[in-house]
Figure 1 (cartoon, helix red, strand yellow):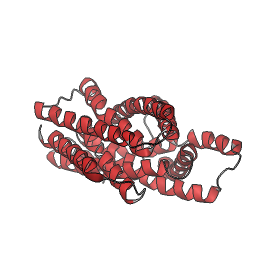
Figure 2 (cartoon, helix red, strand yellow):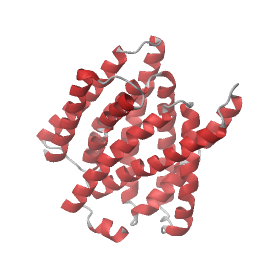
Figure 3 (tube, helix red, strand yellow):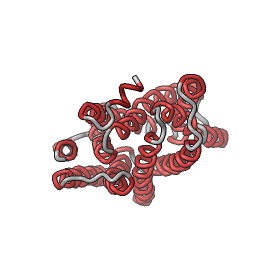
Figure 4 (spheres, one colour):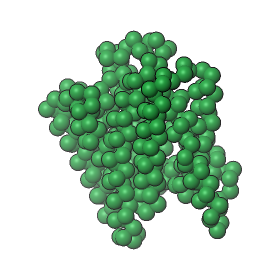
Length: 300
């Protein structure tokens, strides 16, 4: 399978597979965000997810995939730092604000900055129609966040903090997307990067979560938390694994934009599972997000 994936990099078949992987990653990432913002403390949930996927990745990293090349260890060190900052800012945003407000802001900033960064790092360039699609998608995402914000009935100071952390997290999304795309292209076997990515990325937050859990007056039971963590780890494998592979097979900027259709999936999840109302305005904005993604993918 590895040889086949490498053989279709930069081809039309690779482009089609990358498109599917990016859309699949969007769905999985929306589910992942909902899991982190669920009934458990987001810091604890993230710690449970990370320890689960680190343990699952360990045998693959040690015994299945080829050993990383020497230069990859510095890349992994940078990846660890970038993702640690991202996860901290994401957890901070979720601690202060609701899922349907925070999530669109985080994901709305990501594609714009990623497209600009991909132009510098990888020499990618968007056509005029693609820039139009990116503008439609991004503005619709921010409009969705604003619409959700107007419906909030919580402390406005908390909302301001949530939005501030969400903006920082959005920039970190662009940073890790570009950096990870660079990293997965620097090793001959993409599964080497994926296995070690999940192993190394899962080392920090379990420690943070354990400390936080011990300091709680009424800490949650470990078993249901770890069940959520196990489910979240499977979703994370599918989400992050899919988008990383998509950025290797085709253009980083296009994959990043398609992934941000996750806001549409997030709205559907909020409607179906969190019992939130969609309404005509949200439906229109979701349609614009999808239309913008279509323009980006096929406007080149």
